[in-house]
Amino acid sequence: MRAPLIDAAKNLKVIVRGGVGLDTIDADYARSKGITVMNTPLASSASVAELTIGYLFALARSIYPVTASMKAGKWEKKKFEGDELGGKTLGVIGYGNIGKEVARRARALDMQVIAYDPCIPATQDVELVSLDELLSHADYITLHLPHNAESHNMIGAAQFAKMKTGVRLVNCARGCIVDEDALYDALVSGKVAGAALDVFAEEPCQGHKLFTLDQVIGSPHIGAATKEAQGRVGAEVADKLIEFYKKTG
Image (tube, rainbow, N blue to C red; front, side, top):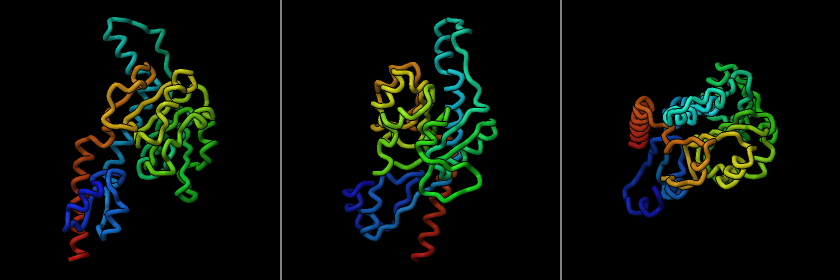
């Protein structure tokens, strides 16, 4: 909801976004006009976390290309030797609700989890490290943070250079956090072995050069698109509106 629509809604009192981020809303502008802005940060966390874990498995075992090979009538058993997730290090960039859900599931798979998030204090449930340390130690990296001025293209050429050769990247957060041109170059060079993307700098995303690469798999921003998550989102939106009107009369 952008400023022109906010201006057109003369009696608008509250905006509730059914989702995690507020990047689709001119939130500061709305608040400057006395409009309350809220979202539903908890409702879809499990669904996004499960998609992330699914992508980790898909990258580790080449599930998409091996399926394409089978559909082409091939039996390339030796070509598709994969990796176990157990024993690997997962670097979680952004340790909010979704990041924590991902970490909990990853630990159940016997992965070592490290995290980077400058916005949270020390915590006992994960090892917090610097961004550079995470980039250099992680076998898999997953992003779970909002897109803003600080996070815009925060994963670019300089950051890819610090990663392990053969690292795999999952982005189920926001597209503009990753410099897509730099990611393409890192994939072509072999620095990044694979990438799974649910979000893109421009959406809808069609004909993107990243999808000319066999190492890339993706989806059209479906992280929260489960029946369970959408049910919780609707309930949380209703609860927040009821609470708002109880307080404001």
